[in-house]
Amino acid sequence: MVDFKDIIANEIYDEALGLSIDDIRNLIEIPADEKMGDFAFPCFRLAKALRKAPQMIAADIAGRISGNEAFAKVENVNAYVNFFINRAYFASQVVSEVNDLGDQYGRSDHGAGRKVIVEYSSPNIAKPFHIGHIRSTVIGNAIYKLYDAIGFDVVRINHLGDYGTQFGKMIVAYRKWGSEEELAHDPIKTLLKYYTRFHKEAKDDPSLEDEARETFVRLEAGEPEEVALWKKFRELSLAEFNRVYDMLDITFDSYAGESFYSDKMPRFIQELKDKGLLIKSEGAQIVDLEEYGMSPAMITKSDGSSLYVTRDIAAAVYRKEHYDFYKCIYVVASQQNLHFKQWKKVLELMGYEWEKDCIHVPFGLVSLSDGDDIKMMSTREGTVVFLEDVLNTAVEKTADIMREKQTSGVDIDTVSREVGIGAVIFQELSNNRIKDYVFSWDKVLNFDGETGPYVQYTHARASSVLRNASEEDLAGVRAGEFDWSKLNSDSAYTLVKLLYRVPEVVLEAANKYEPSILTRHLVDIAQSFNKFYHDEHILVEDKDEKLAKLALVLASRTVIANCLGLLGIKAPERM
Ligand code: ARG
Image (cartoon, rainbow, N blue to C red; front, top):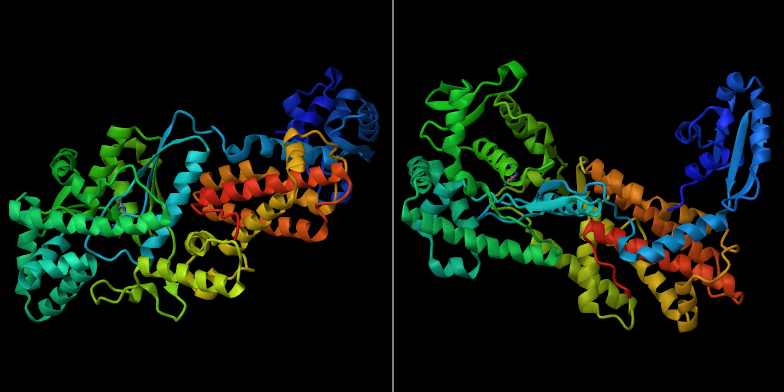
């Protein structure tokens, strides 16, 4: 891709200056005031070596550079050489590159040969996949796609919450009040009902809790009856989760969840003992973290059963040994910050240096717009909003809007899915992930705001312009044989600059684990495209101008589709 700093450095380079190309590159500035050009080269540093006033050096350099097509103007102002980009040249370089690369534009090979694990979604078996889980699922999927785009070999892991004392409760409840039929009919809601009842009844009858604990110990010991029930709950739950993943078009490479590590834990408990890190505390075994300002990490309970953190220790070491990751990224709510801090500290104390490559990527809470904080959505109380219902509602509401708008020639069934679900995903990825946010239908489905539907609509608009162009024009655009000089308006230039920055934005979003950086850039592109579309006639008489503008429309459409794809959102051609 065209690199103006490179061009400038090569033009300025002269042995007599005593600066390498890289030195020159590093000196180039971007003036705050556009009137001073797009780039500027300050000459102060050269004064000593050349025994000349910096102004004169700047004048010499400016005089020496002439006729490079990359610049419309090169002039010196005081000690600076100012460079004004030739907009049409810039547009020709960027637009041609995008159109040549097509769906590969924005991708790079920064991570080539290295493996990254992204762990995300990780819902709890036999519990609802509620709206709170959407964040990990959607943010994690975007982070996976970003790392894939910058060339890493990515392994997607769903660390299912398929283990723990709650399964003791679930099994006890099912044995007492469950029916096979009811369970088969609507598994998760039914299991949730039993689980809720368990907690209600356990308030009056604490012996239920003991029974549940014993049951979990039997499960952990591999007793066939308990294992069979646990397996059944797991399978039924996974089938329901997969329905949601299908709607979101999300897949995983591994579903090795907490249970996967159940037989791997003794090794670590022994290791912790050998390293002198375990201490007994009221029958339980803990790692004391007081020195580090944290509460202790509980490794085993008094009945010998394992805990969440124990399984996370086993999982991390297993992943390092099995995948030899360069980075292992955990996309988990900020509510679990303490858990991840404790866990990292334990790994560090165990001497695993690579714990620094394990990265917890936290995110804030979703609450509902009627003021119901997500915290109030309690599994125990049975008051939760199911993600599947949210997605279905989004699709229905979108279909209603589309029918109202009477969009013709559109397959409402397919497009309302793509737009409705895309809208929910886009909303999730719009804000800085760490911020808490309020879910509101008005915001999500607004076709004019900074939303998914708005960006998708822009993509459909660009597609429609291209549909209205003649075959001959499109062939001309593809062949690239036209004069670009008329593509130099302000609105075209702003748009081209945004398209140009996409690979850099993708890289930044990946490095910061922050898909919202790309989402916001995408909104800028859509707004800039719409300004260009409104400001200018595209299918004009002048053939060169028409083809250059169509080429820019094609490039914009490609970039919008690519960026939506990186966020996990579809790009319909009509809507
Ligand atoms: N299952 C957990 C939950 O829904 C999230 C798991 C996070 N991942 C981890 N390795 N601890 O709360």
